[in-house]
Amino acid sequence: MIELILVYCLSADTKSCVEKRLPMEDFPTPAACTMGAQMRAQEYLADHPKYMLKSWRCEVNVPHQDPA
Image (cartoon, rainbow, N blue to C red; front, top):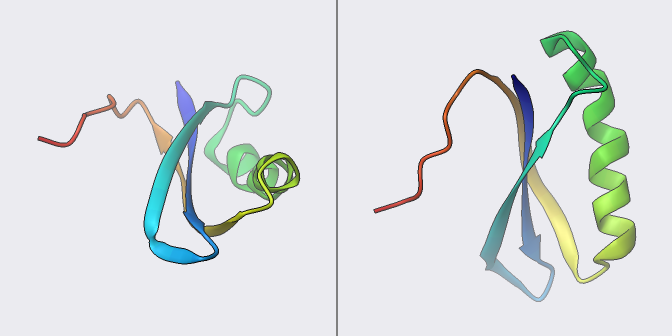
């Protein structure tokens, strides 16, 4: 399974960040995930204008781990 991980921070407080994990079923390869990342990031920003994109990455078969 390929997931796109987007890290967004509040524009007013760059230390207040959230990580969004999006399954990328429409993009079955890491290269396709990379190419689709910008479109998905822009969609989130359009719905959440107070945030800015800090970083992103595509992960293949990496289980989600909650911070301890």
